[in-house]
Amino acid sequence: MDYVEEALKRKVWAVVGATDTKEKFGYKIYKNLKLSGYTVYPVNPHYQSVDGDICYESLLKLPVLPEVVDMVVSPKIGDKFVEEAAKLGVDIIWFQPGAESEELVNKAKNLGLNVVYNTCVMIESDKRK
Image (cartoon, rainbow, N blue to C red):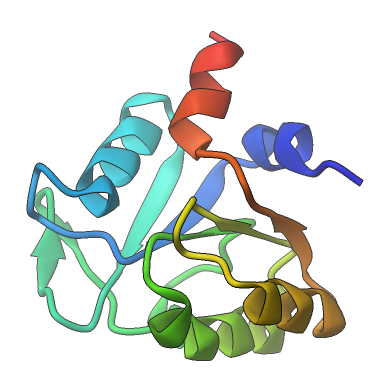
């Protein structure tokens, strides 16, 4: 099943790998979602804040349960965040191009997460504007 449409309807997102480096996709995706009217939480243990917002070290530290987790980190780093998302009962996890591996996608599915991959959230949201 394709969860792109469903994911884009959800309004509370977490971006794992959000960054303050404006050239990186972790920043562009975070900012794009914010500007598109989503409530977005940055998750990155290396930052205190992203774009002026408090940045969280893990999904487990977020003040709310995100409806979608957007992964903008390498599969090696992403593994523990997939486990956190499953533990929290997150419904949809979206792997940005380059953030997925076959093993990680299968792991997410086996943990009960609905998975989106092979497409970029910015491209998909732009298609619907």
